[in-house]
Length: 481
Image 1 (tube, one colour):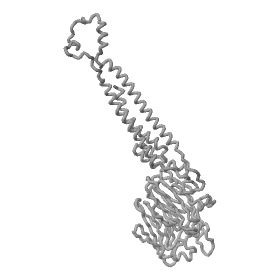
Image 2 (image 1 turned 90 degrees about the vertical axis):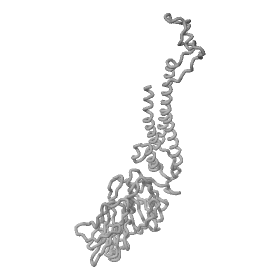
Image 3 (image 1 turned 30 degrees about the vertical axis):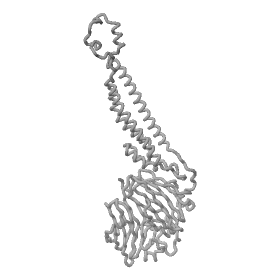
Image 4 (image 1 turned 45 degrees about the vertical axis):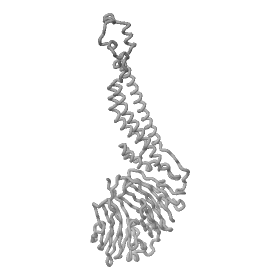
């Protein structure tokens, strides 16, 4: 596993500020809650800056209110909390409280390590400012464990994210990138593989939204701000099961919300995909595209041809061997026929005894003996050949049956792409989970690749390799015979 640091600034709505996170002018809000400021711009005080302005420098949240607090839920192994204070404050992690004294040299408010990755943690900071004292919070860094160090970057302009309904989304040239945004009740959906996901976007004005992961009850986030925040963390979740397909849905719960999606990061060895689109989804969707993957077709054809060639070769080889053994057995193993005995009697050799002489070993001179020639016996080599033929033949029949059953199972469980689902998305993540199951069965080593290029090809090649290794000893033994 790889350690990945996720930086979450104080402007992120995943922080819960109490009693409120944005109060506007500092003179009023810091005495009763929190106010947002920037190191280069300061607070929105005395009307020096209009609401909706872009701040310069680093952002922070400040409060001089005794009852204020900020909380964060996360999954990770290490946590850093950054800020500054000239007052005491309590840090509560998983119901364990520590009272901290202000530091004049470091900007780390608290630090925790060796946390459990499997459990969700909750940290809360409660400042205790006195007269002329103030508490500043700048954000947090969460260290999480993922399968890969490099994330998969999903841009908002791609076809992986499904925006619905299409009428409530636009693509203005904002922040230097045509990132889609919505202003009324809209949603964005993403299906992905991985153990962590971070959604980045911008906020401006009243921005209430909800997020639901894998059908769980939605979480409500308050992204309301007096500033124009170009990019911050809108959603963060780690500690997921990387082998499962996850689906994230973002909903606008405020008719006046203004949220911009810029990009999404997932940590997985498999690319993400778009979920099935609702009716009348993304604009530009046309008729269904039932496009079969070239890799699946080539893999299937090659696998079937290999099976047929192996069966034909075995049939030809054993037939030649049986013909050779049959000809050898007719001379060496079979009893003499009447016509052969008659030809010998008609053409005696000069040194042979008289044909009229009594031969006690001749069965024709034994009283009561059957004078008919015995039936030819089956040679021992023929019986061995027939026995050795059964094992490879049964092996091939088992392989053909497995392949037929697999293809029938895939036909029953195949996922038909929706009318507006991009074809480039359907090959890849839609088949990779099925491919991993079959690759594990046949022990194919290509299951760790980003995308399974051919499920049937991999399965057939794996089964064929097992059949060859199983049949080679019998074929060699037959060749020696």
